[in-house]
Image 1: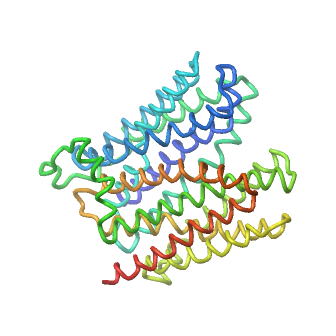
Image 2: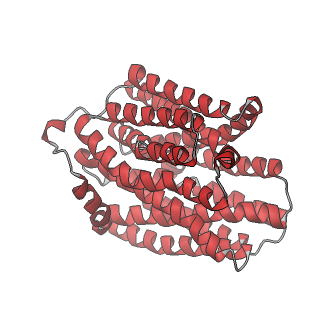
Amino acid sequence: MNLNKNLWVLVLICVINSLGFGLIVPLIYQYGKEFGLNKQTLGLLTASFSIAQFFATPMLGALSDKFGRKPILVISLAGTFISFVLFAEARSLIMLFGARILDGLTGGNISVAQAMVSDSSTPENRSKNFGILGSAFAFGFIMGPAIGGLLSKFGMTVPFYFAAAVSLLGVLCSIFFLKETNNDGRENIKVPNYGEIFTSLITVLGRSVIGTTIFIGFLLTMAQMNMVIGFQVFSIDVLKVDTTTLGWFFAAFSIVGIIAQLGVPVVTKRFKSKTFVLFVSTVFCGVAMLLTGFATGFLIFAICLTIYGLFNGLRNPMLNAIIAENTERAEQGKVLGINQSYVSLGQILGPIGAGFIGVLSVHAIFFLSSFYILVALLFSIRLRKRHQD
């Protein structure tokens, strides 16, 4: 019962946190223009969060191994709260960058929440619980932009104060309702220095199962972020849809992913091997993305992206479960934090690759995504063999 209660508190916290983030994303450009933000600096402002998160999440995860998950999660959410207040109170472009970097530096809540789920799960229900957590994040991202657009009618700073309020609610929920899950053996864990953490970002890739899994996640994240750019360009430039229709289209794509993650228990009950599910889902994602590159009209484009979204939704629950099951309890937070760092790196490099290849044509963006997925597929074959060994 305590496990279920903790899981649903984490779900609530994840919804609150991703809702706050999703709220401000569509408004950043318009809000920042009065401080001199342009298309070039918008890319830097967006990337600053992921860059800061790349360096910070492994340390926050390692600290949660030593000092407990709950206090680190509270600190992370408090940092998000402060960053939204700073964003609303910004008087210069430097303050906007400072707010996003602060949010990235304290943005370890994803990996710490994943570590709490891993602490409390059995091998049988770990994939299911990761799927539920992933669905919570996705739900917040879907609802956030709609709420942010509605609140912006009352003033451009209103959504940012609202985002701060929901983040503060996440802090309070963590303090009063969340139970610590990392209680055993912490006294024997050494507090890491950042040199060790930074080195582990490289050395972890050499670990047979875990390193391969993290690298697959990095490739698939690059493919997804690359696809998101192509999705927007194709919809507006080729299909000629307006921004409202694009928003609904993207929301529908996200809902398909949520449905897939909620269906993880059914999939894992039928197929016990997580590496097999990862391999099959990667095959379908690759084929769907390749066909998307040949699409010229709405119907084929929508069908291909629906198939991609459905099987891509199985990705993270499988990857996180494989990592957790092959990691010692004493370093769950650190390794899941390193995994999140590579996710952040994929979120940075994916759009950059799309920008360069998009000069050729919008179709080339989807072909690049399918190439990333093909490489991930080859590594998933290697992972399956190593996992069996």
